Length: 612
Image (cartoon, rainbow, N blue to C red; front, side, top):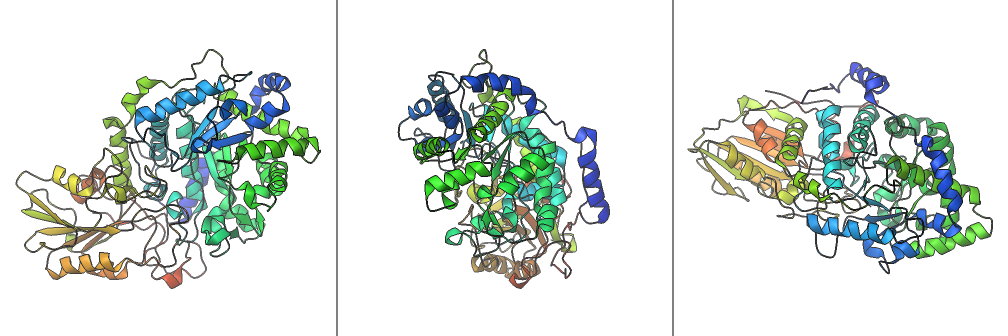
């Protein structure tokens, strides 16, 4: 693939990013308003109940009755991180479920198809056998918008193979504190880099035409400022539901910029953040959702609330619904309380609290997108195209994921030319808990919401398997998790780091490399064997002791299923070219630390990365 590599360490870098965002080829913005005449014809036929139904998204596992899809005229359903088909996570089970949903929707009077949403945030990550790409933090280190676009394009194809047409991605948060458990969902601490790669992901997901049966609707999230929340300000301590305390100029400069880029790239949906801005929840903030997002930035798609977020606005649910809808929420993600939302909004319209014009605007925005996607075409099949099943987990898709892995790796240390390794060594010893663990390699949002250690997915290659694939027949490859048996090896590769987590569970006050991991590195080093450390993590960790012991050290982030991409770099088939998209702190006392701070002396600066 041709490269458009961005060097992220200087003023020229920022200039180039803005130039790229401004160039005509960088985006092709569709106009959703071109469908307004068609939307108006449908809107005139709709009852209030049918309009409210379009504004609701229920979780498939939260339905009281499956027939509620048609009874309440639901405009959308979702499968959350654990919202799997009853039959399991197979490709067939997901496709069968999608077809059942649309068949139920077709029983309504107006036969408006359902938008089915999933968190396909690094591949179609709930489906067994799908390709799992590096999380965004790794893609940020590639600095390669063409690659990010291709990753999103492949993800769209695998999602469409199950019929599903909407992904809650890309996350265009600008994480400013590594303790936040969603840090790996962000491309960078730098808003310009997030803007560039977020827009690329939108183009990849949505393609040149949303009517393309291989495209999916993208959703930029979480609007706005979720990457800037302060610790201890969230509901039940949840960092992602906390408060971002910034003046408006700073909010715009850091956190709003990626949304402007996503809108210019044509994103059709945007998710409001759980978080607040200076004490007001974003879900309830009319200034942000309507004045800024819709009016000032000209967003023509629809805004969806986050999972159960509306209930956080006010203790009285009906009051909360009125505030959210009047603020600019067009679709309510109500996993289990969809009936309650339906009745509350009906009453609010009847009482004049929510003007019917606001409901009509919300429904028009949703229908605009459905028309743009071709869903309203009566001649278009509403069932999944099962011929696309052949694409899921295909060799071609895995090759792109492998490229993404090797370009995301950041070489932090390489003394005595330890790397690249020779494929004809006598013995290579692998150690560490993550050397042969596909779950740790993939991280959170993989099959399960929080992910999980062990063989949780199918397909792909652990680093142990990748090294065995790469070396000569004469080379012996051995492995012990604790580092025992390393003596006599020509080199040791120690694979350590975080175990899987997602939002909430990933919030942490201490990011120091674990004592268990450090003990393995020490044991290997004490055996007198050259030591290469590969770190799997969703953020920079405090690695000083491990770094000092290592002869070579690679930040591999959460690379996904294609561990062969790591072996490509270890053995010198490709040079390491990744550059840090986050500043690397020296200690916990330095966090938060970000490029551009007045006092800036990280362990490794933003943009750092060695090569051979």
